[in-house]
Image 1 (cartoon, rainbow, N blue to C red):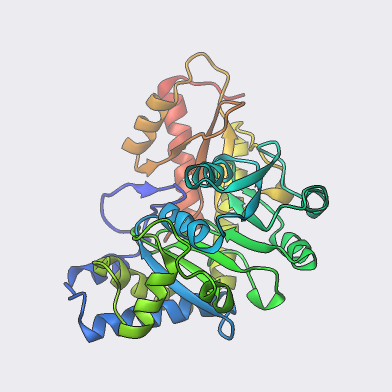
Image 2 (image 1 turned 90 degrees about the vertical axis):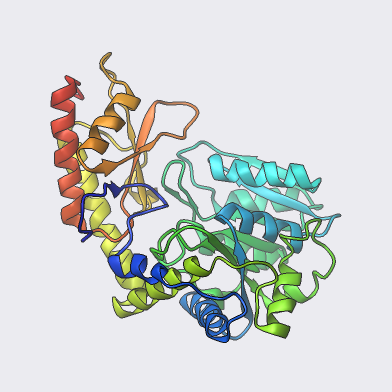
Amino acid sequence: MIPGNDPILLTPGPLSTAPQTREAMLRDWGSWDAAFNRMTHSVCADLVKIVHGENDYVCVPLQGSGTFAVEAALGTLVPRQGCVLVPNNGAYCARLIRILQRMGIAYVELTLREDEPVGAAAIEDALNRESRITHVAQVHLETSAGLLNPLDDIAAVCQRHGKSLIVDAMSSFGALPIDLRRGGIDALISASGKCLEGVPGMGFVIVRRSVLERSEGRSPSLALDLYDQYVYMEKTTQWRFTPPTHVVAALRQALDQFFAQGGQAARGARYTQNCAALISGMKALGFEPLLKPDVQAPVIVTFYAPRDPAWNFANFYAAVREAGYVLYPGKLTQVDTFRVGCIGAIDADELRNAVAAIDRTLKWLGIRVK
């Protein structure tokens, strides 16, 4: 699907984009230009539409990576005297804790294994045990392993207990169904360079309007103040500071393709086919995925590294890249793994080609998997 000699990015973002998306960045835009501001407005409206939040939610875009948007959401939406429950089953959950530590916000960590999804019962127990908890910060899809946490069940528990739920949907937004009409979610965070198949550079927070309007003056940061960004954009239609104009233009084009291709259902179906082709092919080579099928999200798959003494990820990575595919190192702390992404402007045939390239690489490097 991607012409040319550039390697295919089998990573959780940045990822390989369609030619039309890259071409959208060839035009320069003025940051105060009315046409650009209309484009920003249309992008935000469509992002809210994807998760069915049209009536009660607003989208606040933010310059920078997804982590910028995560930090902005926590800093703006959690009061200084608040306390955040963080279920931790991976590196991006741990990053939430680091952000809270830097901001001096109290938190309760719910520690889980890196292959163990958080259950609604565990959230319920923590809320019953710790009355000081005011918010829950939940990573929907923990891409350090590819683990899917049960968002609807967690949202229902938070709603029942009257706790504000802030969701890091960085790697699930656009690929997996999320419906804000079901209730329980106050804020949803993602970014341009993930399953929407745009390019990196813009994060966004879809937040309940009533919650955002109560957060004036709360953020310890000027640049990461979602309330200020929202109010300024509502008043002027412009970004507060220099916007990532080319990134927004690319995202507009990526969203046009997203809807033309069938929206979230079609995007999720293609990624599911990609994931199935990847796992099937890698198993045939002798690789075993870390996660069980019922918790494996169709975005990125973690495989156990071979135990062969000849195995060296850096050498393997370089050889596979030379064959046309960029893989991802493992991010787990307990076992030796590597990761292969299934997302981007690619299909199942591309994943089968990638597996064939991996097979040739293993033979060339003399690595035994089985």
